[in-house]
Length: 97
Image (cartoon, rainbow, N blue to C red; front, side, top):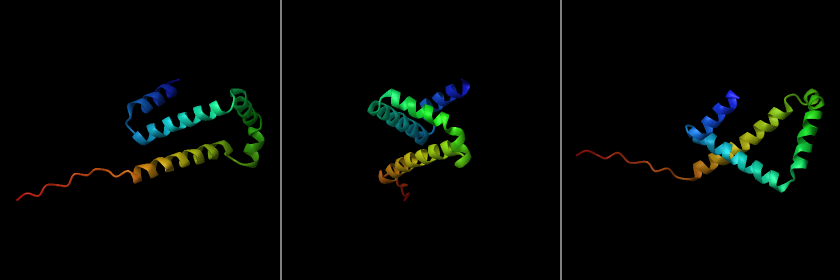
């Protein structure tokens, strides 16, 4: 419960803008995905993953973790690409005469 509270505070505080943006994009995509598919199908997929997790873990170690990390890296890559495309305003230092 404490982890969840700290996670929400970290997202709301906007200390790390990249983290907050990534979490909001993930939530948005999750909502769009769950709207596209019915809730029963999503629960069925989650139940199947939980049921077949042990055989998957034996054959492909850290399967869920690798899937999650690859999804995270794709989202972070898109966000960083957008940040690189948008130019930042930098003030030029004024010359003293």
